[in-house]
Image (cartoon, rainbow, N blue to C red; front, side):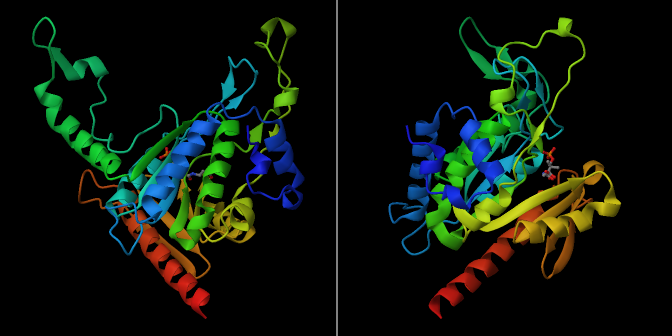
Length: 333
Ligand code: PAZ
């Protein structure tokens, strides 16, 4: 099987923490099939074989990452560290990117929010259906409209070849999948982009120092030493997909440091934009920080079902258009 370091990243240029992380990570289980899916999706959306995209302009492709990554404490994992992320930001952004004509690779935490599902009832699944005979089932009238709407949106995105959903659970899975996707998107140049909304753990237990079996409480209090997850943002920019348009997110609970931290990330990881948000208000407003300055967008409070992702994605799409134009101009000079 092809290993991660055979995939094009020149390992001598990587920060040693990154190399250690990938070398010691348990290999991705479905590596071959994920790679095939990603390559077919990119091919479909970036070649003349894509009838939906017309002959001249190929679709832009965005990888939207979504939800939190887990940190296993045991190799045969019984316990893990997790975080708050619901995946709403990534799922909603995916819908708006599809609407804007993008093809979206939705790299999401298994079981987190899914695109086109936000209006579905919160009730248990079984409450959505009723038995209408010995062997027939139908959707309960009260849920029919919401389910029809979700199915239409989802099926149309999939049928048009605009949505590829790839689930992850652990930080190991997530970063290996992100690397695979980024290296596959390298050929897209500025038409490729990343909207990195996942809440990725900053700390992890390296595989080789992890207990194999369930940690026993009889051994007394648990002493854990967590290593730092290496920052991959800069590697996307420097090596994996250097021409792609890259947006990362910064979450804080202390608003007094939020913009400063977003600005630091913008420069340190050479992002094109960093979306700054605060935990409690993240569904109401976000601030897009760029080298030129910052812009705050808000959810339209006059509409009950409006989402902040609508103006956010509109702005990001415009910025991506400017970036493609500028990159094309420089390439022609
Ligand atoms: O997943 P969600 O909708 O509950 O929250 C979105 C978010 C806060 C995880 C996202 O907007 C974000 O800021 N992600 C990056 C978090 C960080 O690593 O700082």
